[in-house]
Length: 494
Image (cartoon, rainbow, N blue to C red; front, side, top):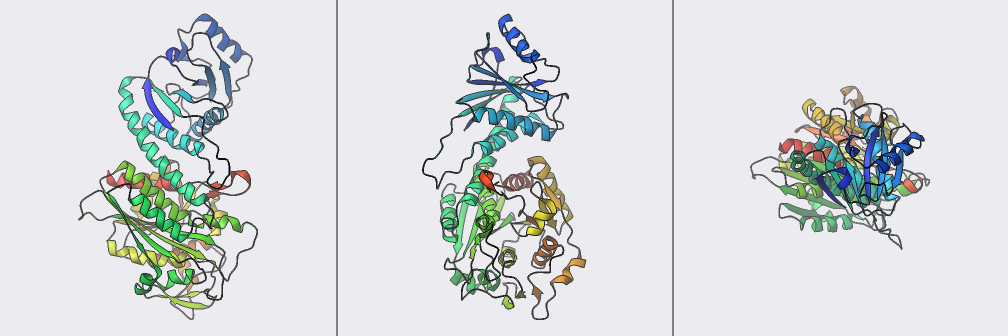
């Protein structure tokens, strides 16, 4: 969809829909000068109480005398002069829902009546684009009759011309982030028989062709054996689909500048392996590659934004399946680091993939490393969907991610990495066990990963609760935490 920032009198705007926020006082300054018939029509409609005071309530008027817009949407903004961030999202969601339900091809939203506590106009424009694209996304790849979009353009009407250039830059940045989110959602939503490790490798090559600043390297299982990635390969042992190690390199700065690294878990389908999952809800295990999808999404945004920095993206793409060749509970495997791992549960496979990736990434001498993984059901129990679980071995990195989470609306909540939890991973038969029992499952999983990240600044994002929505027709990938990752990277680029 196209987004434009403009300015001008509301009375002269030619559009299918004109959207104006209305406070509880019902005073609309932008409509001063509207001819009497139009004023009476609006006042009469408001007097009936058809526009509720609840934030996000809407009222639509057609052919208002004195307006060149075909329809006028009034939306309640509540009692305060400035909206809370939550109320802003409620208000904007109501606007988008109304526009999507109509046959409108264009809409103009007046920004003068919309202010968010502690947020700039640039932030407002960026979030409206990101949320607008999120609302517009429809998965139709495997449907017979794709649903085509109706709304094609949204214009944001600023108060004065001085605001246009900076607001338009925010719109463009928002669209780049939104495109990354859409990329991640699309990959996450594809079924496992389409989105295989080989499919991800093919898409990585296609993405690299879009920008000279992005290169990709694909490592197959033969080379992984030479690299001694025994932990990673133990996960693919039961599948007919060969695993792929995908390495992106975004080069936007001098070769001497150390990169920031993103590491994504890409289990394209997780049956649990020999430790087979229950059948109910197993279809959602196609979403177990959403960490990898977020790396693809972040790279998509980066090549559009072209920041002056270097970024490495590493994806471990693999299927976890049961068969006569699959890794068994009790097996001991050797990781790339040389540490041996007793596999007590083959359904705790994500950490077996990630530990070798986290060892591999050391060769890039990264400034920071963030791994993203749908790692534990325990994190879903702890935090649900609103927040991503965050663990870090560096205080500054944790704070930077927290700030980016608040700025992007893609929030994180930090959990501990205390040594007290490490002893649960002790094994009588190997250097480390891959699970630590039922208690504090997301923490012990992060503790496992921490043993492979001692030489650099590292954070782990457990997105098991935030990466997708379960159940019914709303089921689908959220594209998180692409917004958080891009905000973090742009902050590092200055």
